[in-house]
Image (cartoon, rainbow, N blue to C red; front, side, top):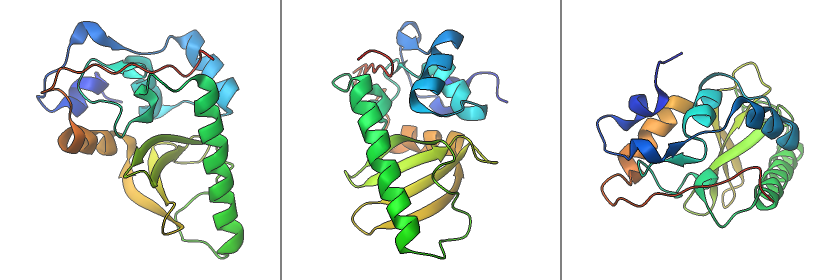
Length: 175
């Protein structure tokens, strides 16, 4: 486990340390119950350190957890919707791609790219930090072969918001 998640993904990019905000241990227990997931490893460290705000390091595109206009209800609906799409994919495409877990393993979507690429972790699987991709347009499900930390480093490189100073803040618990 790394010492400081945000420093690891920042790769020297600037952000406002005072505006970085994560969830408390009590909040994480509530999130696990509410979303029926298990928070461990890199994703847990992310949620603890910067789950509510990255302090301007990255914005809410593509990390949907930072969308201030989405309530907990909106996030829950998005999680359920994606889980149904992924389950439908499994039933329509048997046998499925190797390396992609059954979606009942605590699926949690945290990123949407290009409005149709949904990135998620299977939090109850044997590899909870593995990032998976569901392409809504192509109706494909793939193992990205990168973990959550590597994905977040990529987000900072591609979508990094540190240069604009815009600080996005989201909330998974408030309805």
